[in-house]
Image (tube, rainbow, N blue to C red; front, top):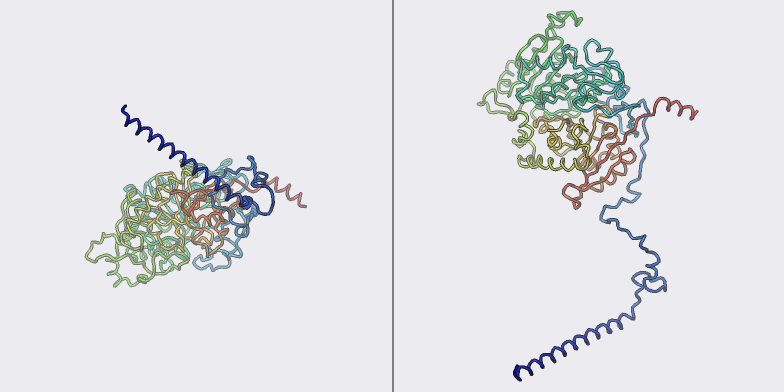
Length: 633
C-alpha cells in the first residue's frame, strides 16, 4: 500500500467517527429535551383527574390478570330493556290441544247455512285471539319417518277413533294397540288406493311427467294423494273440519300434503291454472247445483288440458243406486246436470268406465268463444278481474277466460304457455315469467334465484343438522316462498313443502310456484293458517317479520308458528339483525332454543339467520292433573 492510499484511508475513518459522534449527541439531546417538556404534564389525566394517586395507581388496583376480557366485542349488542321485554306465554288449556282458530265450530254457528258458508274459514278478531301456547296431548311422540308414516301413526298424536268406527267397512283406518294403520282404502276404492290409481292410469297417462300437481276435493284421510306420491304426483288434499273428526289431521300426521278447506262461497286459496288434475271420490259436493259454480271453480284452478276425475254418485248409478239409497230418477238428474255444466265449460268427456268418469279442459278458448253464440251461459268472467285473486274472493258463476292465443293457432296450442314435463319442469323458466306476467322478474332473475337458493339451503344444512339428516323432517312450511327456490332446492329430499305466498307480498308468485310443479297457498300471517296444530316439522321464514312490521305484532306471528310446529321441530328465520334480536328475545317465551348466525356471505351483511328448535313438552299426565286439582282445593 503506497503513502497516498494510507492517507486517504485515515481520513475516511476520522470522517465516520465524527458522523457517529454527531448522531449520538443529537439523539441524547432529543431525549433530554422530551423528558424536560413532559415533566410539566400530569399523566393521571389519562386515567383519573379526580384523585392525587400516582400515575396508573388506580388502573393497577381495579384491573388484574383475572379481570382481563378476551371475548369478541364485534357482535351486535342486545337492545335496551325498554325496546324488548321478555314475555312468557303460558300453556293453553289441555282441551285446546287441537285448536284451529279460523275453523272454530262455535264461531261458525254465527254464519249462514246457505252453500255451507258457516263451515268455511272464519277467523277471530285480534282481541279474541288466544295469547297462549297450544299444548301437545299427553303421550305425544315424534311421528314415524317417511315412507313408513304413510301407513302408520301414533294414536296419542291424533287420539280420535270416530273414523275407525264410521268407516270400518271402507278400510280407511284401523286402530290397534297404540297406533293407527292406514290400509289405503276408500269409499270408492275398496281394493285400495293403489289399485284405484292403476285403474285411472289405464284411462289417462299418469307416468310420463305431464301430470305433476293434483287437487283432491273432500280428501278423507288423503290416501289418494298418499299413493300418488310414488308416481311423482304431488296432491293438494283438502277436507272440512266436520263430523268426520281429524281427516286432515290424519293426512298431515302421515306426512301427506293437506289443508282444512271446503267448496262453499269463496274461492279456493290457489291461483288459476294451478293443477294438472282434479279429483273427487264421493266428496259429496253438489257439482250440478248453484248454476254449476263449483265446477267453474275447478275450471279456474285447472290447467289448460287438465283432467277432472269423478267417482261415486252419480257415476255408474245404473248399478249402484240401491246401495246409495237414492232413486234412479234423482241420480239420473244429477248426472245430467253435471254433463250440462261440463259442456258449458267446453270440457270434453274423455271416458266413463265402471265407477270412473274423466273430463278434460280445453287447451285454449278459441272454440269456446265461438260456442258462446250457442251456449249463452255461463258468460266469461270480466277480463279486468284477476283470476289469481283468491284470498276471501267470492266465487262467481262465470267462466274464467284463458290467456289469449292467436286464432290461427291449433286447438292444441296451450293458453299461457306449454309446461315442461316433470322433472324438467322444476328448474325450467315458467311460462308466467317467460311471458312477462310478473314485472321485474325476468328469466335471468328466475335462474339466478334458483341457484341462490341452492347455496342458501346448503348453508342451512350446516346450521340445522336435522335439515341435513335425510328423513328427519317430512312436512315443511315456507312462509314467504317467492319463486319457490327453497322448495326446489330440496326437491330430491324425502320432504314436501307448503309454499305460502303472503297476500301482502309485492308480487303474486304462487302461479309460478305451481308452474314449477310445486304446491302452495295464499295466507295472511296476521291470521291463523287453515291447519291443525303440530302440522309441520320445519318452518322457514324469509323476511316475514319485516313484511308484517306495521300490520300485526311479531308475537302474533310467533304464536301461530309455535301452534303449527311439532315439538322438536326446527325454525329458520332470515331477516334484518335488529328484527331478529327482537324475535329471539320473544321466542324465549315459547321455550324455543336458538341462536343468531351470520348470513351465508359473511358477518358484514345486515341480514342474519336465526335458527331455533321448539322444545318437547305436552300437557301433564291425567294423574298429575288430579293431583294439581287437589292441591288447589
